[in-house]
Length: 59
Ligand SMILES: [Zn+2]
Image (cartoon, rainbow, N blue to C red; front, side):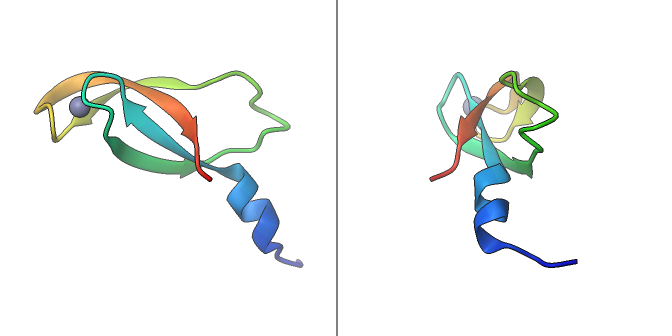
C-alpha cells in the first residue's frame, strides 16, 4: 500500500476542550465516512474534570 503524507495530515484532527481551549487529544478520521463534527465528553487534565471536547482541524 502506498502511503501519502498529505492524506495523513488532511485526516489529522485534534480535540479541543471547550472550557480551557487546550488541545488534549489527537486523532485521525476518515472524512469520507465521518462528515459531521465530532464531540466527545473527555477528561481534561487542565480542568481536572470531564469536559466537552470539540473537534478542531489541525493545520
Ligand atoms: Zn479543559
